[in-house]
Amino acid sequence: MAELKRLNGLSSDLLSVGEVLRVPNNSSTTFEYIVKSGDTLYRIAQYYNTTVDEIKKLNNLTTNSLIIGQVLQIPKK
Image 1 (cartoon, rainbow, N blue to C red):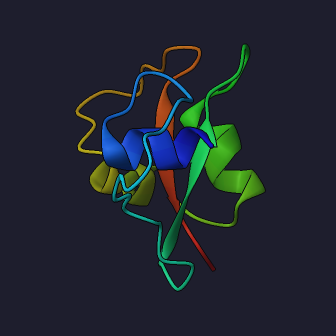
Image 2 (cartoon, one colour):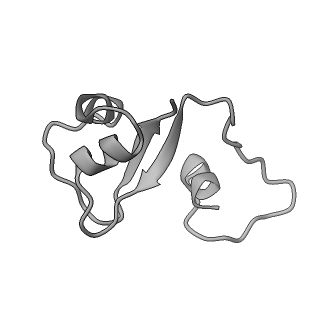
Protein backbone atom coordinates (compact mmCIF):
# COMPACT_ATOMS: atom_id res chain seq x y z
CA MET A 1 0.00 0.00 0.00
CA ALA A 2 2.79 2.41 0.92
CA GLU A 3 4.47 1.78 -2.44
CA LEU A 4 1.26 2.50 -4.36
CA LYS A 5 0.74 5.71 -2.41
CA ARG A 6 4.34 6.79 -2.99
CA LEU A 7 4.28 6.02 -6.73
CA ASN A 8 1.04 7.90 -7.18
CA GLY A 9 1.60 10.83 -4.84
CA LEU A 10 -1.36 9.87 -2.66
CA SER A 11 -1.74 11.06 0.92
CA SER A 12 -4.74 8.89 1.85
CA ASP A 13 -6.03 5.39 1.15
CA LEU A 14 -9.15 6.68 -0.63
CA LEU A 15 -9.48 6.26 -4.39
CA SER A 16 -11.97 7.59 -6.91
CA VAL A 17 -13.80 5.49 -9.49
CA GLY A 18 -11.85 5.63 -12.75
CA GLU A 19 -8.67 6.93 -11.10
CA VAL A 20 -5.57 5.66 -12.89
CA LEU A 21 -2.78 4.31 -10.70
CA ARG A 22 0.85 3.51 -11.43
CA VAL A 23 1.69 -0.02 -10.25
CA PRO A 24 5.23 -1.10 -9.28
CA ASN A 25 7.02 -3.43 -11.66
CA ASN A 26 7.89 -6.67 -9.86
CA SER A 27 10.80 -7.22 -12.23
CA SER A 28 12.55 -4.27 -10.62
CA THR A 29 16.18 -4.69 -9.62
CA THR A 30 15.54 -3.02 -6.26
CA PHE A 31 13.11 -3.18 -3.36
CA GLU A 32 12.21 -0.73 -0.62
CA TYR A 33 13.46 -0.93 2.95
CA ILE A 34 12.13 1.30 5.74
CA VAL A 35 14.80 2.34 8.24
CA LYS A 36 14.15 1.23 11.82
CA SER A 37 15.69 2.31 15.12
CA GLY A 38 19.27 1.05 15.41
CA ASP A 39 19.75 0.51 11.65
CA THR A 40 23.01 1.48 10.00
CA LEU A 41 23.95 1.37 6.34
CA TYR A 42 26.60 -1.19 7.19
CA ARG A 43 24.13 -3.55 8.90
CA ILE A 44 21.55 -3.17 6.14
CA ALA A 45 24.19 -3.83 3.48
CA GLN A 46 25.45 -6.92 5.32
CA TYR A 47 21.94 -8.32 5.79
CA TYR A 48 21.02 -7.89 2.12
CA ASN A 49 24.41 -8.98 0.75
CA THR A 50 25.28 -5.65 -0.85
CA THR A 51 27.58 -2.73 -0.07
CA VAL A 52 27.17 0.59 1.71
CA ASP A 53 28.39 2.35 -1.45
CA GLU A 54 25.75 0.63 -3.58
CA ILE A 55 22.95 1.66 -1.20
CA LYS A 56 24.28 5.22 -1.06
CA LYS A 57 24.51 5.41 -4.85
CA LEU A 58 20.96 4.07 -5.38
CA ASN A 59 19.55 6.54 -2.87
CA ASN A 60 21.70 9.58 -3.71
CA LEU A 61 23.06 9.68 -0.16
CA THR A 62 26.10 11.79 0.58
CA THR A 63 26.49 10.70 4.23
CA ASN A 64 25.99 7.52 6.25
CA SER A 65 23.29 9.17 8.38
CA LEU A 66 19.86 7.55 8.39
CA ILE A 67 16.48 8.72 9.72
CA ILE A 68 13.93 6.34 11.25
CA GLY A 69 11.15 5.87 8.68
CA GLN A 70 13.40 6.79 5.76
CA VAL A 71 12.71 4.65 2.69
CA LEU A 72 15.78 3.18 1.02
CA GLN A 73 16.09 1.36 -2.30
CA ILE A 74 18.06 -1.88 -1.81
CA PRO A 75 19.45 -3.83 -4.78
CA LYS A 76 18.00 -7.30 -5.32
CA LYS A 77 20.67 -9.97 -5.45
